[in-house]
Image (cartoon, rainbow, N blue to C red; front, side):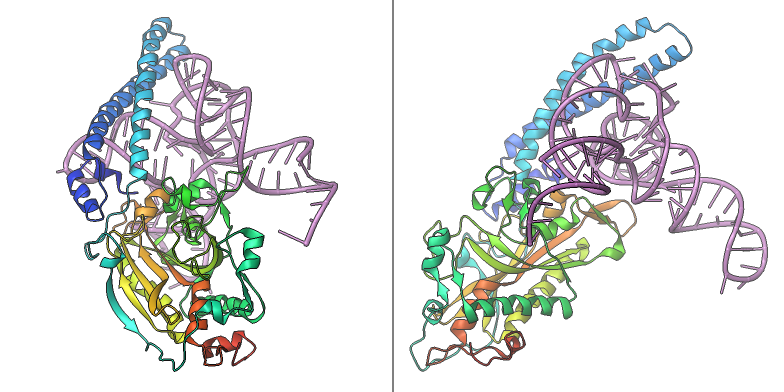
Amino acid sequence: MLDPNRFRRGLDETAAALARRFFDLDVETIHRLEDSRRDLQTRVETLRNERNVRSRAIGKAKASGGEMQPLLTDVSRLGDELEESERQLGEIRNRLDAMLLEVPNLPHPSVPMGRTEEENVEVRRWGTIPEFEFEVRDHVELGRESMDFELAARLAGSRFVTLFGSIARLHRALAQFMLDLHTREHGYTEVHTPYLVHPRTLVGTGQLPKFDHDLFAVDGHDLRLIPTAEVPLTNVVRERILETDELPVKLVAHTPCFRSEAGSHGRDTRGMLRQHQFDKVELVHVVPPCDSYRALEELTAHAETVLQRLEIPYRVVVLSTGDMGFAAAKTYDLEVWLPGQQRYREISSCSNCEDFQARRLRARCRRSDGRGTEPVHTLNGSGLAVGRTLIAVLENFQEASGRVRVPDALRPFMDGAEFL
RNA sequence: GGAGAGGUGGCCGAGCGGCUGAAGGCGCUCCCCUGCUAAGGGAGUAUGGGCUUAUCCCCCAUCGAGGGUUCGAAUCCCUCCCUCUCCGCCA
């Protein structure tokens, strides 16, 4: 959430920044609510002060055996007035909080303005797009014997897949490879997390209250399935004050991700590109505010390293204001080349959320000037989506015969096999 | 799932319903003394909000969470959450 002070000072400026991402801030309502909030708050605090002072006087009078009946009748009148003001204040606060929780992050000035992914801007490309002297197959054809969509549909419905044999093995190898790379070479701590979390955990990272329809809930329990490990990983620092020497925090986890919205728009119905359940290796950074844009470059580079080691061509784009997620101030997407589609497809999303999540989480660090605390900055990125990486390997490493070569980097995880 | 115990500041740990935002200890920071791998003395040491140009001061809130009783709640009552011990079940 944004700094509540933005609702008190510089409201117009904030509205203008949000307009860049096509969010319409109700300035008038906020203005009105803030005015009454301020009045009510000073009123409540004055009344409470008066009550406290008088109650203390009663205590003293009682202790010294003095007369206290007049004091009692005097203070009882305060009660009703205080109660009513507190009720009103609570109501105003709830409305303001509710509004604040539904306002997205402010885009960083460097983010290109645009409504859709069409306005995303390519930053760089890596690798050479492979030329095939035969008709390329897509992953569904290449995996036809070990990738069973019909079975999955019988077990769980559409938008699921069941993998068998060497493809299941490849899926595991990919996750293993990514975890090893990030823990051994990039300095991340591996974390194993719950896959079911409380709603408040999801409020912390911004999925709730606004995007409940994207989540799977568990019947009879106040729990949701995580849509990404960003949720439990970022919540590691919830309600904590981090000392300077504890930062940066760099975490990595391999988890399944559950998304109910996937497929609701009829896009990517073929294959395992868009599923209700998929595995992902997620990277999270918690850093001092001054360092977060450097960290965004670092985190993105870590995700890129996975594709470079696998020798799969990709490009990096910076998302336009309209294509960015709710909590992000700036996002780079990694898009991998899929020969089966003859186009680049998203495989990783790396975002700097600045202090947006930290405020919701109340995750703070010591200020560099030693005066109190300030919200940390949080970043997250896929490093990478395992299912989509599997697709990319299959399609980029296919041969005329239909068999698939194992990328060198994965061989140690595949018993040295050269082919699937 | 059953029975019991408990949740207080960075940690340990007190706390008859009334200057207790909280004794005492540890830890940490600064200063003094001393001068050497130690000890002693002093001061400071929660978070959020408000006020303020800013600091200090002052004010409000917070003793697991939320309600209630009361002029006044860390202290009494209710609900929930969590932790620990024992039993049961289980990968």
